Image (cartoon, rainbow, N blue to C red; front, top):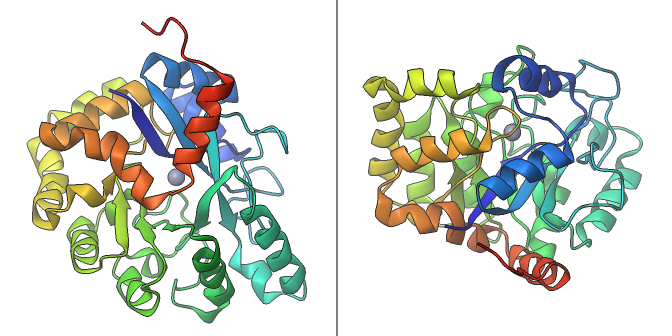
Length: 303
Ligand SMILES: [Zn+2]
């Protein structure tokens, strides 16, 4: 089965390097990711742009817009990757705002770009704050989704009131012309996220980042029924498997381990949708990307 991983990272962020070294054991590099993708029939990944100006400062209020996958040298995005450009709202409240919005708009025109990523919680703004107004306008103009971090923050400096999935309900209501994707199913507020997805036709969710670590850690959690049921209850309640998307949050977990985990969460008849098809609904540029990648790299002798 071909797979699209709609949530990975390839940024020079110390906490990601450390997680790869100490918890998940993955090779946190472009070639490390490519190796894992190839072994697991993952044909495309979407990276979430984020940057820190000094090691260990994520979430960094000084990073300029748009934030990129800065482990990939500028202008060399490999064909198997696309990017959601990261937004630092603090800079949109600064004197540089106009110049930063212009840079964002220029970057959105690139075929490398699949969407826009907001780091709600990490940055202390509600997603309904007017600071993001121009960003939603651009999302509409370019027909690109806005991907929103929700739930627990991977930093003690995040503020959870800004990352609660219920905040996306009003946003979706105000901007019916924009598609939103709630990351991590709002974990631990997965029932709230399920309701926001079920109620709003323009809201989707990804299943990335629900466990962080190596296979041993996953085995421990996967054999705990209360843990698995926490997510299953939300998925069953939402009953919208056509709006749930597979993502790993790599390097927070190895790709193969995460695939096994999501396979167990999702009823088999929905695997094709969750692991592959749904991504095309949320990220319309994927189709063209895959087509041009396959033309450059004909699948000769694929076994
Ligand atoms: Zn992530």
